[in-house]
Image (tube, rainbow, N blue to C red; front, side):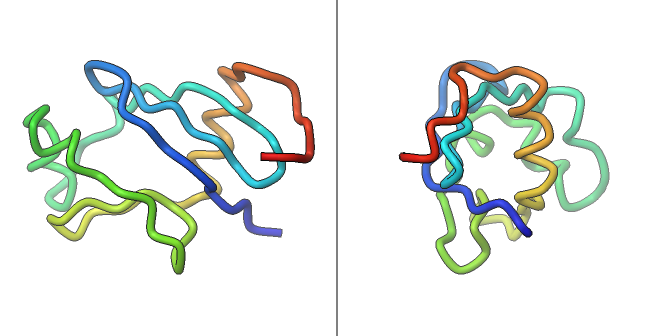
Amino acid sequence: MTPRLARAGYLRDYKIHVTFDDGLQGIIDLEGELWGEVFEPLNNIEVFRNFRVDSELDTIVWPTGADLAPEFLHERAVLNPLASRSGIC
């Protein structure tokens, strides 16, 4: 099943706090992940900070057209969790 991103908030640098609908929370550091033509504009921190959660895609998106798969974000959050899964957001 595809994870659904419930919330995301900018922290600092290229770090984002994410919360999924399964209760998983974590900090995702995307500094080393922003390569390739579609992600190049996000290397500007002011552009990077301008993301939002898209409820149709269940992930974060940027006005530049870039987005990241929710599975990728969930996997990264599992590696750096802030809290155990509660099953409740």
